[in-house]
Length: 265
Image 1 (spheres, rainbow, N blue to C red):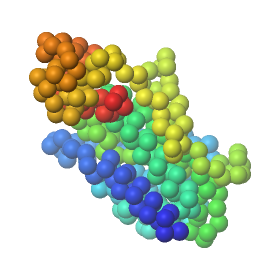
Image 2 (spheres, helix red, strand yellow):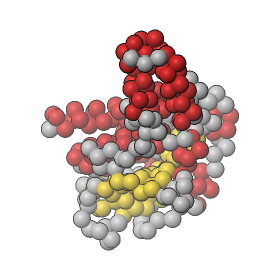
Image 3 (cartoon, rainbow, N blue to C red):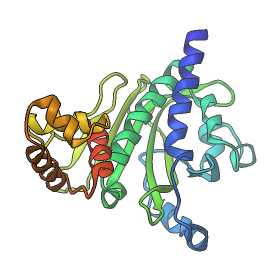
């Protein structure tokens, strides 16, 4: 049990990086209040009884909750609204919670490795055993999407819809996947299972460029790399320029950052 508790704490710490560690554009507060919450909720459709949560991702709190909240969860609006969404830990078993957190971390890795313009089209869904306040349970489907972004492409508001799908599948199991519909000709539905990382984009670099990139990332100078690999400094510069062009980087910081995000090392 202690080992499980430590794993849960570590998974929460990793998840908080995506919520608390993001920069926000300075004009955020001026347009945040104009967010059309009711318009978003009116467009939501569920397959059964449902409730919903709107979260501020920066503060990690539920701003609003609604739907058939008490019927679904047993909790009142007053008990949950403005509370930390860490309290959602009470909604399931520690084992299911750990799998959900680990899968969520994989989701955010994928989400923030995509271009900002694509993130509007990336959503997640997972199923699990939901524990009501009175300790009865049901099989839940939770669909999540980022419904508001700042000018830097970082998530601001997250919308979660929880539906009772017991009549569709009475045996509760952890299933977690993301849907990336940024390219309608190649929509991706990716299963996010802890221990199984999503398939990353293939590296655009040649083996020779990879060798140069690794040494550059270690802080080696062009002269040092040339001596280490036994090639000319002009060849090193040619590889560097080629890598810049292949991934749209303007400098070494961008090149290394993109390579880390896409798993090209």
